[in-house]
Amino acid sequence: MVLIPPRLEAVQPSGKAAQFVAASLDPGAGTFFLALRRSEAPAAAEDEELCDGDLLAVAAETDAEPGDLVVWWAGTVQSQALARVGPDLVLEPLAGFPPPPPAATLRGVVVGRLRRLAPE
Image 1 (spheres, rainbow, N blue to C red):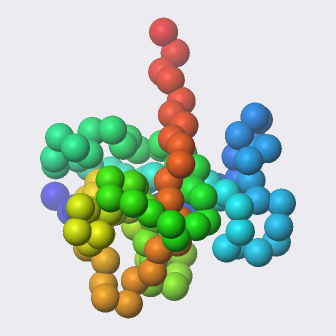
Image 2 (cartoon, helix red, strand yellow; image 1 turned 120 degrees about the horizontal axis):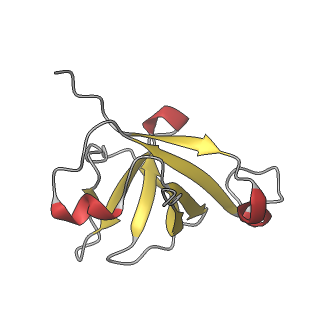
């Protein structure tokens, strides 16, 4: 079995979520949305809060505190990943993403999660 790593994909939300998208053309301003894409189930219980297809609202800010879920990157869209800020302010990998390299920077703080509910 080939393990496919999770990825974060930039998306343009529709409906009511669209009102929160940054109005600025600067990608470092406002709020942007990323969809979590993963083919494997989470390995750890703390990852159960995140599912394939979840839409993450990310505030483009670098003011994160211990316990916050953040998006880090190494400067390219393909390098975006999730981590939780640990009590010692170290980024702890999450949801099957790799640990950040020393050159990684914080892209933003996850401020919300949207999930489509399955029809009953």
